[in-house]
Length: 59
Image: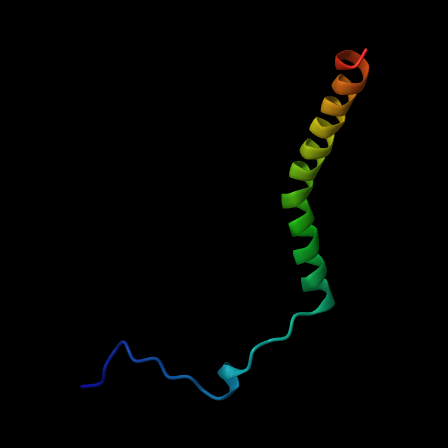
């Protein structure tokens, strides 16, 4: 009786597919979509702190 859990791998299946330009572009856009809100929040909060320090604190 053969092992039903044994997986045979052909030599053709061992080759990894190269990433195309469209795939890299999609990954880059996805990364920007994840990171950009945090960057915007950081820049806006930094702007508000500097605005507070220059206009109100140091008067």
